[in-house]
Image 1 (cartoon, one colour):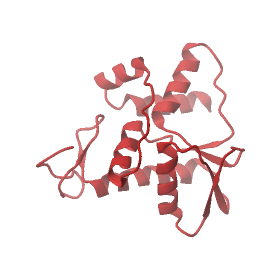
Image 2: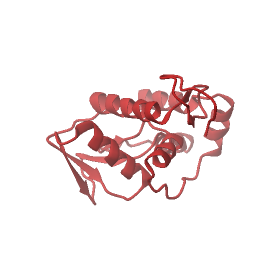
Image 3: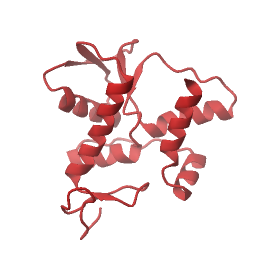
Image 4: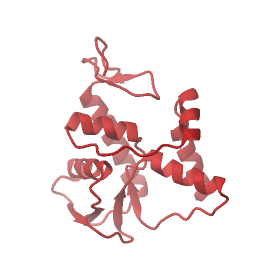
Length: 173
């Protein structure tokens, strides 16, 4: 939590400080920034039909994905929570988890098989998901086990996780 500082976007009282940037945000601008990133990812990478099947795994990622999808699509598209994934199912994940999977498969010299499912929130860090949960007063649940190598590099060179995600995307495609 940040005190006595102003939001880098609107000038209101800032409450959110992220580890990878010097910029600080008020709650509204932070939520707007995350929603904008999710909208862009959906527009560019996801094929969404008349209805949206979202895998219900009761994780913090699922709760945030449901919240943002309802906010983005409103009553325009129906969001159906399913227990089993298929090719058209959106799976809530996070950037940390995706990078960890990619890096571990790369270091083990295994072929990374891109799943046929669409991942949502795969461009949002776990840190950001936790901040959204705190702002929206949603249950956070358990934190994931981090990869020490990635965290060490990220601490020294902030923004590394986003760069790794772009690099892995280029390698896969």
